[in-house]
Length: 400
Image (cartoon, rainbow, N blue to C red; front, top):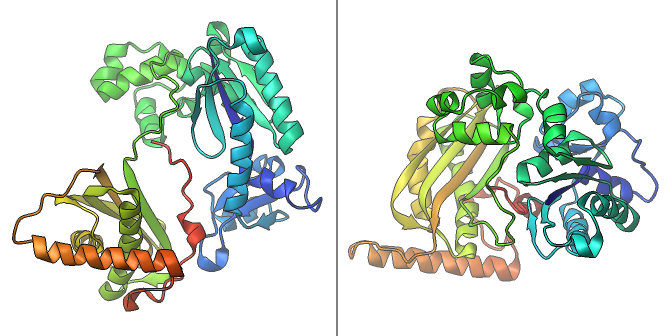
């Protein structure tokens, strides 16, 4: 049996607990990025705000229209890590096999532990009560025979609840939901399913598997399995291999000029390359993403001649990609991502060897100085306009 434990409105709940009584869980509170840096995006909100339609990812100005009386708190990432570690310590008491799935949720393989702590539903309530008592946080717990049922169970009723999804409950509670509420079904897939006349999870479950395979390929098989409450995945405590490193920045002001856009790109590429080297990885592919002033976006990516972790090399391959995305519209955000990561040694040509050795030495020297004296110790002249904030590098337990 699998349990999925999800901390409710985690960032906002931490803000309430650490407010010294200034806020309560009934306070309309939102945790948002800094609007002065044009990072005014809702990261979390208490339930009085959520009930008005505010959700994570919504812009602050939109959220303000729905809930003008809301209090805005800034994110405190190290605080979140402290609570997350305490949360993991609690749930690890109930099983040796825990799979962390982000900073605020985890799967528990409870198989074989029933003789110690009792039935799964009983231990789900024990965890819920213990997290509330020791941390002041609430959790929703889903109980099911596999990962999809446990996850959908924790999502079904929030906050502070336990939901058990056996076969009968899956059909009664989950099948009536719209297809977009099924885990892994995004907006694009949902639109395609609706175009096929499939609107609910139950309708998806009763669609012939061959029909879904014909339309979606292998993904169609997964859709059919999940809609029917079936899942072949297993809980594992082994960390998933990192598939991508990315970073984006909302610019201090919209950019149009080629030179300014390329400076922003260099700044982002340098940060991604630094993280690559720190992880001991090299990338075989680089990509860029831009968001325009009208909030539309585009991206491009390209394979590298050979895997690399060199700042300059990654930048020179990313530069033509971002220039191809210039279309006269002001650019609000620039992002860089690298993928096809490998820890294998590089295989450059004998002609590139000396040049690349010199670049490696330069990058390592810069990394060492920043590690010792801080991130601002060495900066490229062209990137001085961008204010580096180490909190922006907070990317805990990225999901794959």
